[in-house]
Length: 369
Ligand code: NAD
Image 1 (tube, rainbow, N blue to C red):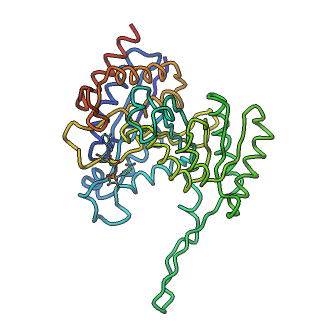
Image 2: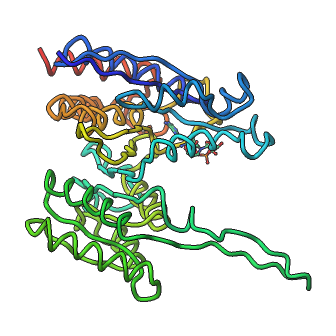
Image 3: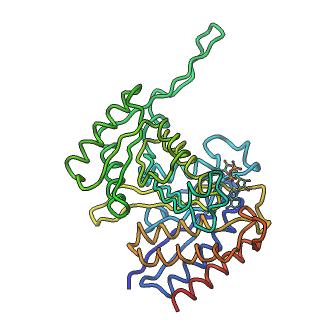
């Protein structure tokens, strides 16, 4: 039986509360699944700053680099608003992404049938929605040089960000998207702005070339990023996999996120290059932040965190059946009308963070009995 090593980084705010529920689920799969999970915990974000004066310690970085997967909660909060820039809570997450070379960010936007009423769009537009947004995470305008503000000395300043992409960066993210499409409905939409940006021209050329050479069985469509945003709110179910750059991915994935009703429902995976053994470094985290407004109140929805472990089962441990089981358990709990405060509607039963964990565990027992 394989034994996998997880490194848990709960972080700040609601991070530790939702991680506690994810750990119960991890333990359940360790006891009832085809693999065992060992885990250690570390500190990241404000918690690491309070303990060590940095956003993540070298020792914890080493644990992250050697784990089979990192499970990350959330970082940040007003307590750390004025810490030195390099030690700000987000710096811990950025360091992990950079050192682990996590270039592919996968954000599914799935609308559980029981939540189709909670979307800002009409129920008939989002029911059954299942999109995967693949965002390039380590290149583009967030990292390109020069990146500076120059004082022009005449009362004016000039700010520059640089959007840069090289062929290999586009090729590897395109392959992630095409591979995922093969496991799903077999369609990729590649979003860029080739009408006004040189990086968009290269992006579309390279994606086309990878498609022609390696993925003819997958259906490819090129779409301008602004049109993609519009189509996401007009008719989101037309999409299967959307692949896009760092900046457009940031925006499009937030748009897709809101289609599903609540931030508390959205998991994500960040993957690195496959090593010689075929394994990728990987970090799994909810899309939302540390929600300081509800921290400590037992109000946090743990589903995004738990569904992030579902993604770990699927993408790091090749445990698709177990991932499907956990997805079904979550869907059933929602169908049974249990809701944390963020999803609460008239006629539903409000539960706390740990009661939601209890309900998902009970459903796992039921489904596997
Ligand atoms: P947020 O995602 O923390 O919260 C936005 C709103 O959604 C809040 O009202 C919050 O209560 C609610 N919410 C979020 N997750 C929820 C959950 N699981 N259950 C129920 N309600 C939930 O975003 P914010 O308020 O803009 O940021 C708060 C802090 O989090 C800031 O310090 C920010 O920098 C940080 N942040 C961290 C990450 C990360 O760790 N990856 C991401 C975004 C923001």
